[in-house]
Image (cartoon, rainbow, N blue to C red; front, side):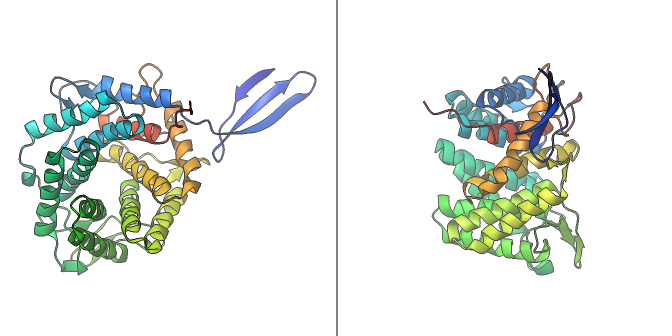
Length: 365
């Protein structure tokens, strides 16, 4: 019996078996799940290719000494924490501290960064690091970073919301969604309900102003009220994450319904192939977008209990892993095609994140 691989379809692998005396027999099998061992290989490849242990920083490129950009370093740090959540490894926990130490050594004053979303990404990641390590420095930094952005760059112009940058010309989803996530988490970590009220207020503004109410999240708004209706996976993802954390704390199912609509819209409109593989959004900033989306899809599936999305995410993990570079296991921006050369670290981290977050669990012993 000979077997040949055919294109996959709708999350199922189609295989043609040529059986002697019978002829071709078409079988449709479920998409193969990525294994825990393969997830470990994906994380190892990310570290081997981009992590500089001496500087305690992730590099931007496969070669050279240029460090990962400010906000992209936060996404790489989150990927380390994804691996810790999956494995509980002491070595990975140590890398959480190392990556932070290396970053703050060269980025001492975050308030000089003109992009407020950059700071808010780190506020989220620091809150997560505090939950893992219980080191107060992370909670202190998360609160200080959030307070700086929220207190200085939130106003009633265009109805509310947070400005993307210090020039106050655009209010974008890429800062407002993360603001909600950071505020809601701080409400729990600080036992301070005022942060939950801030989260609810920003979310209500974003939903009203920067979404169509049916699952599509718009990029942003500029004065007087010009909305950029473009949509990207990371904006969809942080809107989902914001809705899930608010659902968790309020038990208001409206938030969960919003998250489900955003996930369904993404699946219908921001994917390629019959498997609904998330489309490439290039490298540069776009290389990090899908990693953010899948990270918050995990929260929808686990914390929101919406397991109907799990096969879709597993199909994306399988596609990314199948299209890795065989020589070093690095994955690129297009999870539906073979990985090329010169992959940037944030791009590789997005693919590593989907593999790490949606690998099958270790078998019970």
